Image (tube, rainbow over all chains, first blue to last red; front, side, top):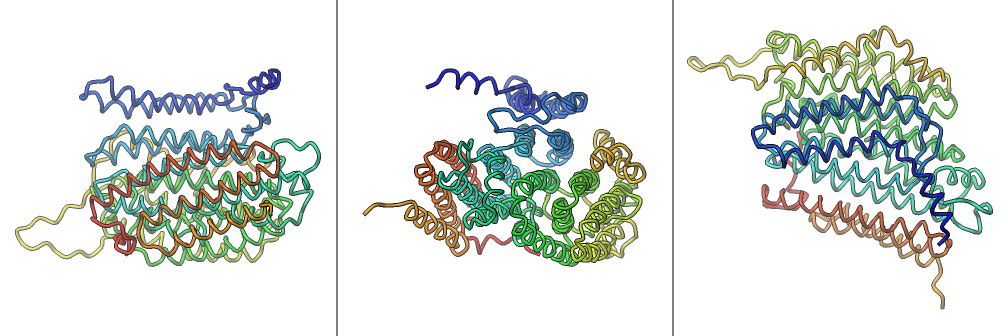
Length: 506
Length: 101
């Protein structure tokens, strides 16, 4: 073995570039150690350690936002650091902090081991960070599987509840199926790109994204490459839950513990879209194939998501199906990015607005749900405005932002996506999306109506108290988080300022 | 006769198709799980064949990663199936339909 080659390979391992992921890993392990070391009565402090540690890391990450590694490829082409990657790191860290806060609220009602939940959440978000920065199919696959397997555990976490286990099994089967499809696509791409008869002389590794792109540009009409691209896109489409890979969404969203549903809805979807944007760039020479595939998915997704959500009374299924339609709007942004690069910024802005609004709604859901996490009906929200005006306000802001009511952040996100779609000349997609938004207002407002207006209930028989609705008081950390989410949705609606300039006008 | 790349690919696609159809058609969760593993193995076979005929080692290294990932997936998956069997006394997918409205 050539010693110099090994030395130069080792010199390319810039561990400093990975400090957020490494520190998250250390934090996750620290939680497990604390569980062993601390006496049992102090165990309730461990979740706070997890949350405070992540907040400290978030601050460090924002302070060091412009690291010297941006634009560099490290670890021998496994990772590529970019400004978008930094943005998604902050995004995922924010997601995992919020999931941990919701987890504290939700786990307090279950007799379950607690610490592992926070451990897995942290590990999964570190894997998501690696996933969106990967520049090589091996790392891409391994990071994706780390995320997916972590989610298998999280979805079936309330293992005394058969619904949670059933959701876990469904996610397991569909997730493993999509991973296999994705893997077969990667293998086909590897096969054609590495083919010595086709490859340009002296090509580097045949699995990193830049050499795949180079190959696709040289051979714009290769059959195996086409099959591979479609298979890889299908695998990613499963993660973001677009038609026809959305069958798992309503069941898994309903059965999973509410904080995990939030993690799936925001974290997993955002990771899928960040990856899709990277892959859309890699597959750019095959635009003639990729655009029709994505466009037909987007149309079917928007129509299916909105129409199926109309008939739902279980709020978790409802938010899952509405999330499907949001994936459709985001897909339009990804397609528009081929002609108008500003659309990439619009997609990231939309994801951020979606994070604020979704976590506001999921936070309220966590507080309103009883000990059976899977059964949350619209009627549980009756009189919420009277008994918990704060929760009702947060719910209204969150749902309004998801529906795209001006002047909330969700409206600006939709506006930016639609404007870029208009610039890119995607008039049919734009028409379908606007139709979808109009339909969506109906079910979002049905939910708000359930919370704000008194509904008729069977009067309790004489001598019996009215059955109490399963609600818990809002603790101060959750109050702070929910309040700032609602405030963020409002402020970002009025004043986008530097965020938009930075994301869109680059 | 010599066995060429196309023969390996044909076998791998065949295995993949058997696995895929099995996931869609079979009703027993454990059998579905075996079919999922079959799909992963089919990909691995294609990977090794490509690696051999392309003359690059990346594919062979990737196989180790796939095996590791598949082992982790089996560990979690079987745990979920066992826990579900304890609760519901069945692993037939058509009886596991509590999540419907």
